Structures are given as structure tokens and as C-alpha cells.
Image 1 (cartoon, rainbow, N blue to C red):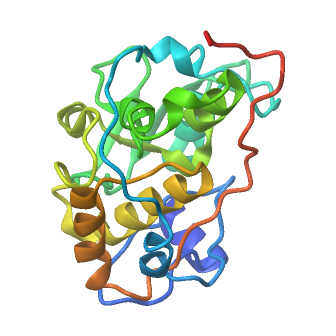
Image 2: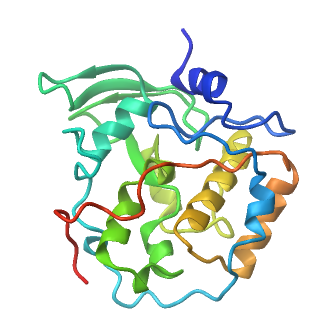
Image 3: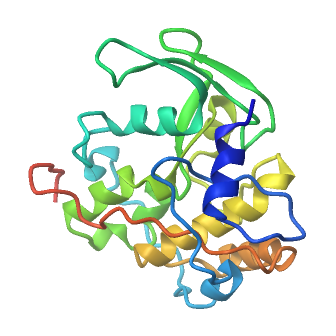
Amino acid sequence: MISRRVRATSVLVLLAATSCTVDDVTDGQAPAGDGRPALAALDDLTVKGRAGRDGYDRRMFGSPWPDVDGNDCGTRDDILARDLDDVTRDEDGCTVESGTLTEDPFTGETIDFARGGPSEVDIDHLVALSDAWQKGAHTWEPAKRIALANDPLNLLAVDAGANRQKGDADAATWLPSHKPYRCTYAAAQVAVKQKYELWVTEAEKEALARILGGCPDTELPQGDAPTTAPPEFSAPD
């Protein structure tokens, strides 16, 4: 059986052949590479010190997993359906009841998902919301924060334990233990920060440059989701 990640790689050509072995970050709503190396895009990011965490609350990014794209399914189920293989859904046609995370990006393990069972699969914000808050998002309008929290470019189904270990860390302080995924991980972080005009710290930029320097042809993924959520969605100012 061909996994979703392999199918997406062959169809979308998200990443050019590089010295790194990579899994693509998406399927279905996937961003396609625009041909530009992520390493080059990294140089365009603003470098600044980390702002304070004062005022941060998950609620500043809206309610978790709303249907911002208007497809009648919440964001979490959209990403589970995108990233898992052998997906089964509830009668509503949206709720993902089960599936298999084939070669989890963070650990390389295969994980079976069943709704209501052990919490083994999380949806990770590749650029953590707290990290985004400290690097520019604290100045945004709520609609932009909601968009970031639900943008498929910034979301990935992963091993729950690894995701919770990551917390709100950036690339300077946490990387996936599954080394073949690190090129893709770094490229996705650059893509999200570029799209939403978030900055990086000097240590973060050095870490991303070190990773991408080993796979310099890795393309910058692009997502077509808007950077502002529809007006019916709200979050505190």
C-alpha cells in the first residue's frame, strides 16, 4: 500500500531530491514547492530577540479546531484525514474514528489512532503558538492569529509524546528524533515564519541554517490558506 506521504511526494513534488531523506508535510490540502530553496528564504527572515510571554493564552488564537475553511469539518479532523492512512469516519462524514500514522514524522514509528482510545496522536503546530506569540503574533489582529492556528501549512499529525516533549520550543531547543525528517521540519518552519512575517532568534536561525545546510536544495513549501480567518471567527484582542 502506498502511504499518503509517498503519494503526495510523487504528485506534488514538494521537495527536490536532496542529501536528506524527507517526508513531505501534507496531502490533500498540501502546499506545493515554488522551487525556491528554504535555505535562501531563511536569510529573508527578521532576526530579533524573543519577546516576553506576557499576555499569551491559547484562547488568543481562537477556539481549538474550528471549521475556518468552510468545508463543514473542523481543522483537527481535516488534518487527521490528510495525514493518516486507512481512515474511517463517523456517519457525519467528518469525524475521524480511526487510522494509521505511517512513519510518524517525529519518531519514525507507526502509530494506530482510534478516537476515544489512548491519546497517541496529536496535531502539532510546527511553529508553536506560544513561540509565534513571542516572535510577532502578540501584535496581530485576532483574525491573523486564528488563521495561523488553523493553517494546514503549520499543522501535522504526530506522536503525542514527542509533541508534548516539544512544547513551545523552536528549532534551537528541540528537533525531531527522527533525523530523516529534519530537513522537511526546518523548511516548514521557515515557510510558516515567512508567510506570517514572524521573526527568528539568532540561535534559531543558526539551528535552521545548520539543518538546511545539509540539504540545501530542499524547497520552501507554500500553503494557499489565507492569513486572516473569516469574520465569523473571533478571539480576544
